[in-house]
Length: 433
Image (tube, rainbow, N blue to C red; front, side):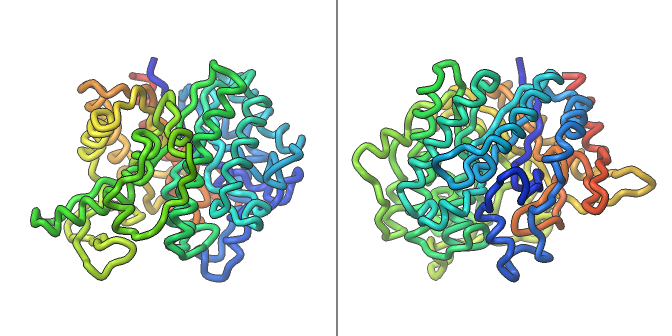
């Protein structure tokens, strides 16, 4: 049985930032920093999913999906990051989960999609090893609360973004620019994942537990020794740094040496991080072209944008064939027993014209990437489901509301939802599968 779904995340769609006992997250704080987010946008209202979840669930039912991959907002359910649970916040997810199940849609929650409670950040956030243990307590509490109805769990979404974009480059919350802190955060995120796997399994042996990692394959324009080195470093930084600890219980030696920094590993950490998972949630959007650059930091390469390449509204290269290669490589290299594509999608400059949104570029992207995924599946890669990113347009982090990834258009002034051509395509694809 192949699972067809859609994905969203809490801070990007829920809104109700100051309602129901929810406390601020690092994204509430970050979005107030002048210049941090395009147009000074924030997630205070977003898509108002907190109040309009029934309408959004109805849209999912109309699409014909049988699973909904969303995230639980840690600051909504445990405002102080550890300790007392917030009943009003829990009640919202009760209604959401029950509403999904009533429509024949299986809930697939992610526990962490970047919205760390500000209370945790005030104590050091992911730079503080204790944060991994707070996360495990939160995971255990969610398993106990929702485990009677939720069987599929994702611990952490894209630690790459939290660690590198949030703590090294500072372009995402919490906006820190420090390599050592980035390395610390990456390790503590992965440790939190492993501890959460244990915590969830303590609640129920029936749970299916996995982690979601994003992968960005790299190519170079030539095949010189320097070109190959650039590819190696890019792969190590983007992909192996997170996949190797989870599936091989070690960090890639070449990248550790190139960083020239200490990874804060305590005895037993790698065994915890590499706890067997039931599946890998794999996110794929694009491939990148890299070039060796001895002066570049933290590693000697840079990303370049060669001309004549098809790109999305994010400037990301469209290359579906790489999706097939990536899935086959991950299966062979890491021996992963089950894959779910937890995010795949594209942003375009969508416009409502005469009450309709025609998005042929997204339809083409979706069709090619679904075909590429099924090609990998036909060649033996154990892929059990696909979740399109995203159900609806949303707050796209530092890009604010400028970038639209949704199958369904959102008018942020009126909150009107309008299915795009891609939604109709996805609906037919599911129906005919």
